[in-house]
Image (tube, rainbow, N blue to C red; front, side):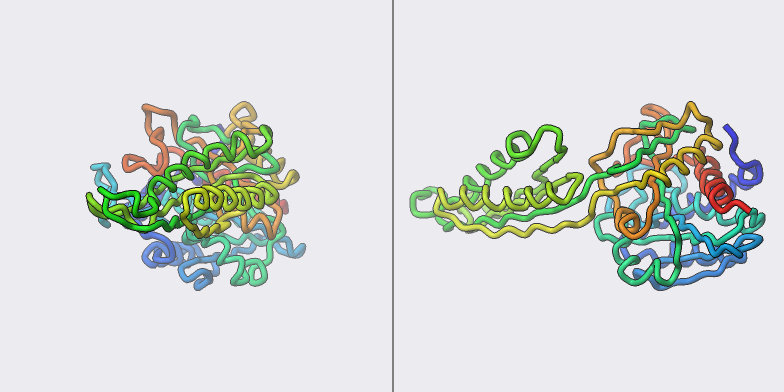
Length: 392
């Protein structure tokens, strides 16, 4: 492994940043302390700081030893935490009840700060690097907001790159793929309206629970019977709410869930099929329904040229044998997809550790913690990407 020696020298500093951020988790668009921390570090490094995009976003701009070409690339890290009660008991556990860094965004932020520190010291590149610290990746689309508020108009770049830690992958490995790499993320809500009545006299009402239960079962057939076998889609019902007492059949039942897919045509089909299926079942029971269907995140699509660049850079850091090019796509979703709709780029996965060892706990789990052992690897990847892409 060929991490950058200078970055390895301040590994403990990166770890300290990461653990400070972990102890003070902030959720979507509320990352005030985190943004202050990031902006303060960038200013300390002598990097030009811009604030205000997407409320709590921070952008740092650094020119290399020369910038005659006018070339620029963007590096993005997410900063937000999740609404999860942390169950770890180490010293840097969350100090905010009901919030924790359960996806490693604390580590992503610290690694990009580490790269920024090194690059500000050396400036061993020709061009400009834009450090994008994004709020609200979890569900709320902070990446979309930054783009809509003019991120790439204010800070032009030719390409943009992101990364995410990956529990289950060994430390020192990197995986990536060109083309669709992460699924689109849609949500739906079906409100079934029947006729409330006494639970002892169901014949006098229209039971929305029975109707909604049929809908839940029927939705399981969309992926298996309404979609081509090679067109990957996952439909999951994640919430079912109805009634609030023992002896009343309620007036309404609410079903919520998600749809994951890889192209717009499938999204269109899913929205049509869910609406048609729910309406038909409700009509057969004498109930009515409304459907709210939202397309939260598009599919994340890596461009071919930038994926090859990222793979070559990763190989310089971890070795050819530790880079898995052509990895399977993930059904999870990422709002970095919005940035990739505007600029070519690549999103890679960095091994966080295997099950049973440090970093092996899955994300979005109350026992998760980012593995500080990978900080030097991630920061070295970022710095090498800049130096190899913006060659002097």
